[in-house]
Image (cartoon, rainbow, N blue to C red; front, side, top):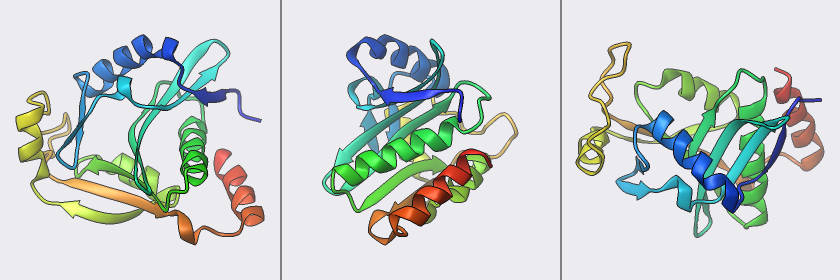
Length: 179
């Protein structure tokens, strides 16, 4: 059993969400596919280990698409990210969504591997998308600390209409929690 709990974000959480977003994303806004998001205005989930928040996921619902806007893991507690993604997947299913997706950048190879291991597939690559994003959010650096330029957006998705039947799917998710 994991040592954390997940619950939906509540109004009392939004000062904390603001601090996390500013720390992790360098501003109170996030840019993806040329759209500005303010995570403090979005629904989402928080993971707690005891009284301490250890993870945050914010999301946006648009039509039948459920977008993970931010995912921040604030602890080395294993399984927090997977559990937050599963909470988002369940919320997307309850909302009748057919797609669960997120956007990352070309330099974020760790995130690309992480999300693909959790069933996401690369769906769209937007070459040079960060040039436009920097007009909206100048805080986006030209390169990361390891040197690769931050240039392209990569959209990853899970088609929720093609998921395996529930018994296998939930067994598989339980397995992923302890991977």
